[in-house]
View 1: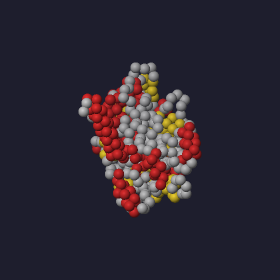
View 2: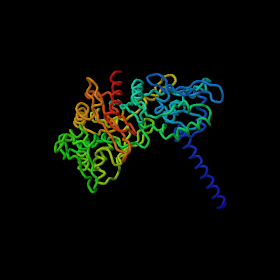
View 3: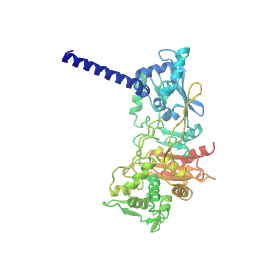
View 4: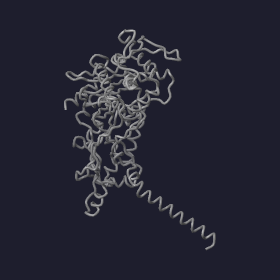
Length: 479
């Protein structure tokens, strides 16, 4: 064999090996990923010939498929569509989906690895293939209460069982009707989608877990207070100067307390009192004493900087990587460039409620095969331990005081000890506020942790957000 022929032979062999390796990777290593990819048109269109699995809440379908005539064998239907749209998402004739319809497509369409034997059996027996059903952690009573309480506000409600991380309610408004995107007319779907996309109210954005996020305002004082306790340098009784206003270091800009309050009027104020009365000036000084590195590390323990798969992907909340001293002071009461989702602030309360242990949040309780075999079930997972039990108990008591005898009184429930913190975040001179409430109940044996955010309001966390949270917490406690 001459040298030139040998080179050609080697080249052909290398090309064959490369083709063999790439084919093996695609068919085996990347099989699941490619099947679940919403851009996989072949799998996508084939899924319309399968009876797609149901999405269930308390055993009742909120998304299901019904037989139809024509090219598409099944039509997707969403019961109470707008109320659950942030969870279900939509399944449409365009090769793209949202919410659980997209994130759990391999299960719902029957194409997951766990369903291989079922697909094989369907081929052998000639029976119609079916997708797996997904049972959610959502409680329909709590979801309805959150939907009703949010009313016409722009905002979101997230309620979590702090013991397991199970999400009991996830509501965002404005929203949309996924039934309008489930029709079998591609042009109508595209027109509807573009209309929703161009709507200035952003109905496709789940404000509970995603989007541009908002400054958390005074609810972030919980993170700063936790940083102080965990540092070992401060206690709830540690005191700071309490002037009516103070100039930010390195600037000529002064800051004051909400509504120019003197926060009790004393010359100094404890961390506990500053949290109960939501005093900005003492917390700004506390943030300066702690430093942004310590606050950032504590925020990360609560989940800031991380995206959580519910399995819908959440936008990471933000405590900025670099801050000037003045910005660190502002971050002490949730301003500057601090941004958070309601999911994140509910997780802060959930960790405090659960003795300092933060559970990983989820909206899926189980995945069930058509024969009701459990393919996957909720196994509570610890995400982190941002507080030791003693400090968690101290934080809980400070939050109880904030509701019973402080500025979070709008969350009071007769006969129940409620822990909570309000927030009223500024968005610029002359701009409307973003208002918050986060907390949990009952304080002694928490069943629910919650966060409420309202965008574009004149005022205030206690008068607007806290009553919404109260109604949702009451729904949980009255189950």
